[in-house]
Every structure is written in structure tokens, then in C-alpha cells.
Image 1 (cartoon, each protein chain N blue to C red):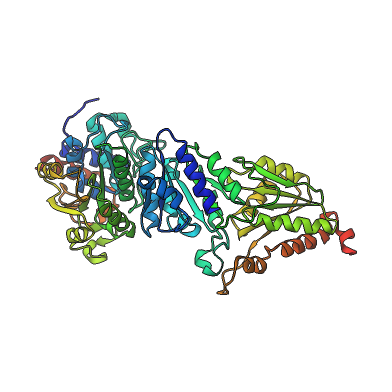
Image 2 (cartoon, rainbow over the protein chains, first blue to last red; image 1 turned 30 degrees about the vertical axis):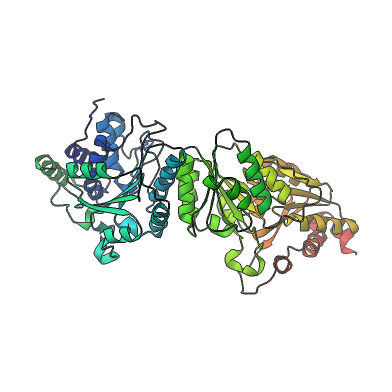
Length: 269
Length: 320
């Protein structure tokens, strides 16, 4: 397997398009919106010497429906083979639409929104109790913040000053049936997190170097928990998908696939 | 059983070479949890009134090697965070212990929001989730000790009170096994939870009327004590299940499953809660009387069933 020390988000997007087209499965737009965030996390932010290292940083893809992008990253990291990646959504594969812990590299199974942040807070508290410097990173969707349980954990983490807990919200402004501003307005999201006692940093979610710097600057040893509000574009890199609700679930036709691939390969992402 | 549970938890923690046991509460257990909280303040967390986060935190802690006990009233511990239990410790096969206090009508006049009448049903269907409903404080303590090394999750359904004890039980507990409290050939009484004391008392009253009853106590709902149930059912024509729980999903359903799947001819009569709450409030004993769970009501139900021709005793009891 080819290993990469840094993950190229353009390659992540290509693989997302290829596998979702082959499997004829949707959730493309949200996988494209997190490609740069995942690439930044797995290009030196997360301290994961190997997927089962007990003292590794924990990562929770709380918006589990973007798992295809995570699988693409795992492949580019050399953690899963091309053959395994190609099994996406096939019968008997460990690579389903949502990530399962049975796959090395997935710390927690997700898929039901609103649960991942509490796992992350537990992981961060465990690290503190075990006097470990490891951190827990949780990637949420913006509409996931509709879930009340997110705010239960937000209060707990702030109360206990879990500085080693880092949430990243993929603020693409869309959810399954509409735009978040129309369905359930979340704005001003950063202020809401701050009101709950978190350090909130707003950042361009498609600027990998800036994301990396923002993550590196966080004090994960003392102070409040952290949230990066990452402004993203749903379907980023494929113009006909960008900002379009239907690409939450819709799979591509062959023509659409070819066009998408061309766009991603020629894009500057 | 609450105090017995906490005492057992302190004992387990004292015996640990590497600290793994944690206690998390959803802001319940005032004057109950202090023996642990004061002995191990750094291993005790009141997370506030937030049961979903309670179970989610425990999932993250257990993944890192801890054994978190999460504590609340049974309805709040099992039903509010049910999906967190399912997708957390169950799906991840992690040693989270969910402790629900106030089985059945234990919270009496607190009313229907506090009555745990479906927790056994919803928990025992989760594969790999061990479900334990001790009948008294001594058995609760034994169950906590007996399950300390289980690698998967456990749901403990505890009664509030330390007394009374179930006569003849003497703290016996074996995971996945039923406990035979007495043997008699006329009737089989099967109980779960602290209502077992009413069942034993009913057996005494039946005995005074010449009816010899077996009393079987099922304290592990999952994994179910199938062989013990098969053996007991095979030896009787009529079995009454008794539980402070809706008749669907709990002990009665479990016994029916075992009887049907094994082609046993024993007729199963379920004593439990058949109706929805109607607003009337009262003590646990009041609810027992209303739902046929008092010793007198259990005895009457038994006699009624034994009078039916299929019981094999119909003629004899019918002449009385």
C-alpha cells in the first residue's frame, strides 16, 4: 500500500466520487464538504501512530454519513487497501455508509446524529483520569447541532474544562431536507458555543493550511474545550452539486460522474 | 437495594489494583451514593440532569478501559438514553453498567413517569446486554460482584428499598441461572424482582389451602435461564409469571417464548400490568393490589387457574 504523510484533499474527493458512483450510493455532498477538514486532521494534527495504539488521539466522525471521505483518507494513509476501499457498500464489507468500529481506524461507530460528542467527552475525560496527553476530536455536522444531546455534552465539557476535547462543526448550511437557515436556524453558531463556555474559532473549512494552523494553536492542556466552526460549501469541488439539497442523498449518473471527476481534477482545492 | 449496590461498588473499587470503576449519576442518589463519592471523589461525577450525555460519556470512558456505572431512576436510566445505550455500549460491546433504581412501582406516589414498567422488555432485546433484576438487597450485592468482570454492558434494575429480604433467597445469584425457592407439584410460580416476596407469601397462603407450589426466581432476564425454565415448566401444567412490569416484553413474555419454542404443554398465565396509567396515585402496595400483584391477588389468580379443567386439579378445587 502506498503511504502518504500528508493527505491530498483532491485525491479524497476523487475517491469519494469514484466509490459513490461505483456503489450507486449518495451522501456525496457532505463527504465533499469535509474532505479538507479530514485531510488536515490526518496530515499531522491527530497523533495516531497506528490505528489501535491505546494512547492515540481519538477521532469521532459524529456526522457518520460522511464516512466515505474517511475511508478515502484511511486508504491514502495506507491503513486500508485498495481492495478494501473498493468493497464500499458491498455485501459483507466493513465499509458501510456509516463507519463501524470493526474497521481499524474507526474509534467509535456512528450514524445516529448527536451521539458522537458525548463519546468524545468521555474519551477526553478518560485521558485526563489516566494522566495522558491524548486528545479527542469530534467532527459534527451543523444540523447535528439541532440535537439536544449535543448541548448536554457541551455543558458538561465546559463545566469540567475539557481542554483536550476539540469539536469541529462542518458549517455547510444544509441538511437533508433544506437549508439550515430555513429548517432550524443555528445562527449565530459560534456565539452559541461561546455562550456554552467553549472557545470557538471560525475558519475557512476548505483552507487546509489555515485549518491545520488553527488546530495547532489550540491549547489542549488547559482552559475550555474548543470548537472550530468550519465554514464549508456542501458538494465543494463539483459546481453542479455545490449548495444543492438533492446531493445529500442522490447518487450520480455516469455523465454526472464524469463531469464531477473533471471538475475535481481541474479544481484548485 | 440502592445502598447495597453502592456498598458493593465500594468493595469492588477497594479490591481493584488498577482503578477502573467510575460512578456517574444523572443528579440522583442524594444520601445514597455518598459512600462511593466520598471515598473516591475523583472517580465520581454528577453530570447533571442529562441522561443521554451520561451514557455517551460512559461509552467514551469504557472505550479507554474504565468500567463506568451510570445511575438514575430506572425509567430515566433505560428509556431516555435508550438509543445511546443501543449505539454505545451495546454496539461497541463495552463494559458500561446502567443502574436503574425504582423497579416497577417502587416510586409509588411519584406517579407513572417514575414507574419502570417496560425497562426489562426494552433492555432484554438488545443482544449482548446482560439484564439483571435482583429480588432483594443481598442478591443485588451478589449480582454486582458476580458481574464485575463481564466484558460487555449490563443493565441492573434495582429496587429502592433495602428491606424486606425474600425468604429463602439468602443472597444467591448465578448469572444466567434461575433460583428455585421452593418445590411443589401443583403449580409453578415464576417471579422477577422484589415482587418475589409477594410470590413467596402467596405460595405460603396456597400451601395452607393444600396447594403445593414451586417458586422460581428469574433474576437474569438476559441471558435467560432457558434450561432452568424448561426443567421447571416441564414438571407443571400451570405456571404463573409475576412481575411489576407490563405483561408484554418482560418475564411473562420470556417464559412464553421458552414454553412455545420447546413445545412444552405447561399453560403460562401472566400476572403483571395490563392497563395504561389512569392518574390514580398511591403506594407500591396500592399499585400491587390494583394490578393483581399483591400476595392475596396472586393466590386468587392461582386458585382461579387451578380450577380450570386443563390444570389437572379442576375437579378437586372446583368442589371447594
